[in-house]
Length: 239
Image (cartoon, rainbow, N blue to C red; front, side, top):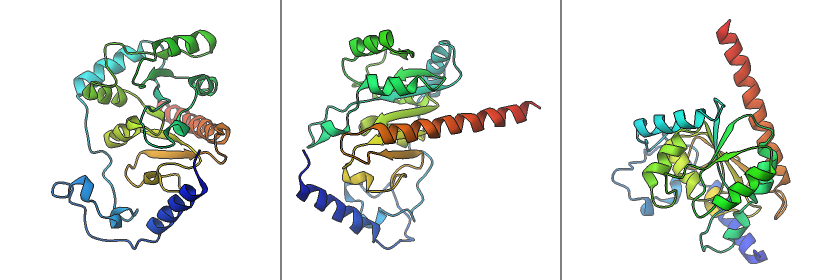
């Protein structure tokens, strides 16, 4: 469990980052190694590009066509756990059963972006819930980074906990919703819903340790609002 000292240290680091003065110096990603990025770039005054990576368009098209055959125009990728050995990483994980019980409110085709041996877990959830999570078996989501990038890019949205999937989705410029624990990794800061690093990420934070109810409710509300607005927009375009 996170100690009071750890919480205090992380809050201080996040607060210090928030006090940094904006800089007008452009970020040269070609000559500045990621490990040497100074703390001054942790400021929203530096405008990030809409995406940094691009997946193979032909592979993206094939995957999107295959997933649309499941019956929905909207495709949402989901990831729910991390296997990193970093301290407190288990606090990031969410039960797929819990996530699926809420996703049933959203009319979409859902596809797993979760690496690891999850076939039985997905089968169990598909049998017990009102939604079906597609599993693209021809892509090794752990070892085939190009395949994972193409699958993410085939999605209209990604919903994930804090793991490598959200960083790849953010770099690809895909609309990504991130569920964060009460005390997240320092890279996400504290108390904000946007990301320092990726324009297309929105963050949903626990208000109580171990309680996913509030962030999931906010996420579902936002998605339903977005879908209603999109429906209205499409109706107006059809007139």
